[in-house]
Image 1: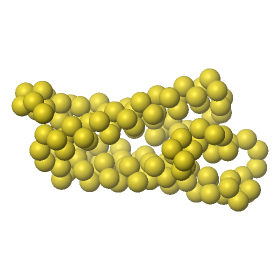
Image 2: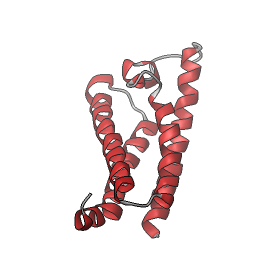
Image 3: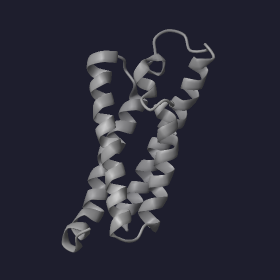
Length: 134
């Protein structure tokens, strides 16, 4: 139960970061953000929508899912989704350091949460999946 609480709290932290960046992204689209910003870069929209919008949907869904999912298939799906978020964060973190070269504490918050969520979900679900099989 403690791991699920930690996951929920982390999702809340990342949701805050996502909503902050989503607001900034909307302000940038209206021309209200002066100077350089990560929300003005092409990598701010990896899947055709702002990354922050994906996060604003993902984190509440993850927070609920860890409490209500049941069954091996659902656990595998949750792990695959967490892995996808962690891999995307790795790509975006690399981009932030070597391509965009901008400071973004909100981005780093989301990246660290994504990597932590993968670790925690793996701890929570992977042993059971490996023992029972898919």
